[in-house]
Length: 78
Image (cartoon, one colour):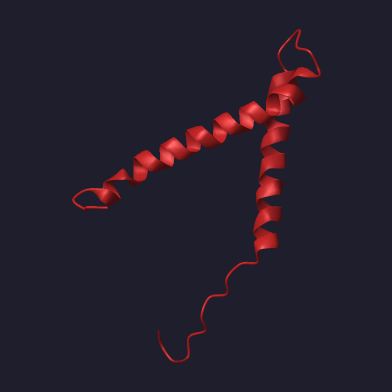
């Protein structure tokens, strides 16, 4: 590191948690809008299904990222 360079500040955990909460709230509103756009849906069903929907989304994203990063471990013994 150069002498005049200031080290990057680590983000505050509370700020990161707030950011994730805001993103999840945005996803939930998108999901709710699409869910209610279907005809004949039970209005309370979305709230019951939301935790599972979010879990499935995080699982799918975890798998997607793991597949993209798999090349990093090629040729390594770890």
